[in-house]
Structure formats: structure tokens, C-alpha cells
Image (cartoon, rainbow, N blue to C red; front, top):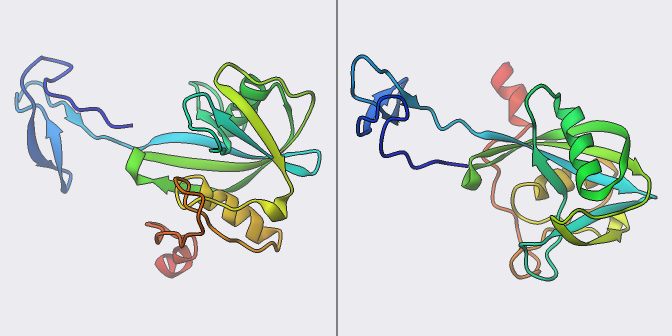
Length: 193
């Protein structure tokens, strides 16, 4: 999530663009203030929920009919990412996390978010929060990941299970090729060498 600041939140001076730490950033020009809007990505938690041997997908109340995705949410102060995704799952679906394992970390540049995705095996009786209007349970082999954000986590989850990956365009439902990832886990070994 990005904020458009016009005035310094500390001293109310009009903000300007200036080079700070090697990048053009919004900052306060007042020497006594020093405020810089770093615009750091927001960590978002996502769950590939396995419920009774199938993938649980949910539709947010704000989304059009037919659009389903993972359970997601924000971390709260004082909790670990694992505690946060278990809490989000309980709040949004009433399901209890039985096991939680990291799938990966994914950029979502358009929304300035960093997605931390987990595989969560869940149990209990489903009761959706007001935030969600419906859900679907799909066999893993029938899930087709979308070409953005959490779709990459779904693709990595399916690949790890030895299942084929066939992307769809989330707006049209048509087959699609994913855009290249800005950051790819396979590049890490090359960078570290």
C-alpha cells in the first residue's frame, strides 16, 4: 500500500522529491526535521489452505462473481507470521491451522506488498466472516494459478507436489503466460556465489 504524502507528518512542511540513500524519495526539506517517506513494502500473509484433501479458495465480498483466491491478511504487532496466518484463517473461515509450512516469499510490486505464503493444513467447520461471501474446495490438480501476487505461491505449491501448472488470467479466466517475476528464488544461488 502506498501513501501520497503532500505535507510532512512531523512538521507540516510541504514535501519535496530528493535523492536519499541512492533513490529519489519524498522527504521533508526542513533541516531540523529529516522526515523521509521510505515507502517500504507491506508484509502480507497468504495461506494455501488444505482442507480435507482439497484446496480452499475464497471470494472476498468486494470481488466479482467467479473470482476466488487464497486466504490473506496483515500481520499484527507482536505476532509471528505463522501466528498471523493462523489467526487470519480462524477469523475469516473459523478453521484451525493444524500445520503451517512456508511455501515462499513473493513480491507484489503493483500494491507495494511482500507476500509471505504458507501451506496450511486446516480442520474444523467452515463459517465465513463478513469479509468473505463464498468458498470453493477444489482438487489440487484442478487449481489453475493466476498471473499475479499469490498465484505464484499456488504455482510453487503445485510444482512441489509434482502437479502441472497452467496459469489463467484472473480478469478473464483464459489461459495465460505469467509475466516474469521481478525476483526469483533460483537467482539466489547465483547471487550468493
